[in-house]
Length: 123
Image (cartoon, rainbow, N blue to C red; front, top):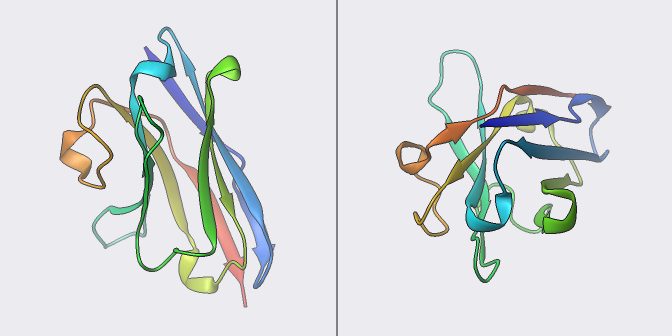
């Protein structure tokens, strides 16, 4: 069971990036998926999540209206489209999967984690 997050990079303020979370060894259809981010010295922060069954989505207040989470079950991938990026969005972004946790931004409820992908937004 593996999750892989990729798509990070360096972008200017106001730019966009799309992160992808791909799974191997299991089918993402049955899992609630969350995106989290972490800055060195700070706690991991929930950014967005999407439920397995009915694709209910939640967003942190700090990213509402700018980020969009979506899933493509045919590709076994979940995406995080990030628009209007700000320097404060700079962090390592992680995706995580949970079985039957519901859409939640509580990191402790997630069972599987991918390695992070670094997003840097320059001012």
